[in-house]
Length: 505
Ligand code: SF4
Image 1 (cartoon, rainbow, N blue to C red):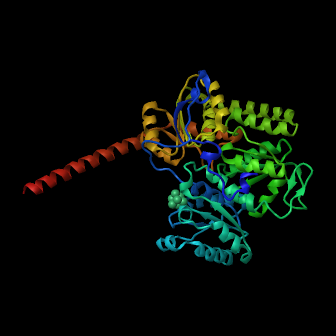
Image 2: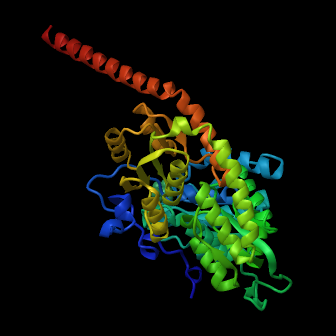
Image 3: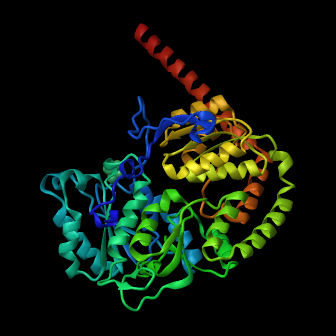
């Protein structure tokens, strides 16, 4: 029985023994030098700072789906991240579909009364109203903590109301309290898609696996390229370019794919992951249930990893020689183009902070263009990354810090003070911490910028070169921060003196 046959996706602490709290080094993580890291999966810390819940990555995927309404069954504040995510939805739909389109999201806005009497009838009414008002192909009902605590059964509500509405209803279980590993969100969304959009009556035997219904056929040269929103269109185009050079047809799931088209994922010859952290849940299901083979290693970031990724794909279709020619040509051209940047990068210390796979693949890329990695902070750890730690331990000339931590700014700030990197690559939260310390920063993920494939290596190097040639902005930020702190202290002192003076009078 597949996990998708269960009502909800299991949390990653249980399914993958993933952990979010660990301090180590690259050699320990790789099990090198006879040592093996001791990882705990409880995620407990003596002191913990703010994290995010699984709603954020789930909504980042769901809001991109065209012809879909995201209905949050939760307290009103849950999913407020959708306001900032909408810029990405507009940009992404504009570039893919020729017209910017907002995501449509609603909330049942559960309040104190609902907590007492239950929110199921409110949810049923909201589904009917969303269906009537927007006439979408699908409605994704995303549950937050409150329905999980008060015991609202969103699956039963959906089951009962489905005959009354035209939209396909997908339950997406994102109760924030149930996991500390927000990557569980990818499983929760794939779970809803797998249970609802890939099941269409009686399955038919295609000879090499099942298909959801009669009329579908296996497409021997078509591959599913998975993107849960960690790639912008510019990166998708780069991977499409490489895959098409192997004479493969590419369909991209799930972001920005029409919900009705999801079923065609079952027809492909191969599903290709761009990040094992994201995709293993869905790809295992496609493989087990529909016979779609999958590739789930190597993130195509950096020269070596892009080559490994492409070789793996080519090997599945017996096109190794074609891949070899492409890789040699691309690498030669790229290495010549990178030569101009290398002198500035050589020996500069870099710290990387991101989701595990992206952080590790980016570390390898930065080594390839001349940087020295002094530390990596990953949001969580699971066994998929073991091969990446081994690669880095092998390529690195020395040992360096690995911190597994889910958004713990105090921990990151302390590490940065100690390691004093010349450059920091991270998401907005980590970049804020590093910038205040005067360290030049660069976004490790931005859907408008190239990171992936050979093009990504060059574009990232070009951007870093421009930034490091003049790192004054971040130094000034630190100076301004210091001046601000100093003035605040003086004002506090003056206020104290005035208070004492008033009391004395
Ligand atoms: S942790 Fe719970 S209450 Fe908070 S945003 Fe996430 S789902 Fe909502």
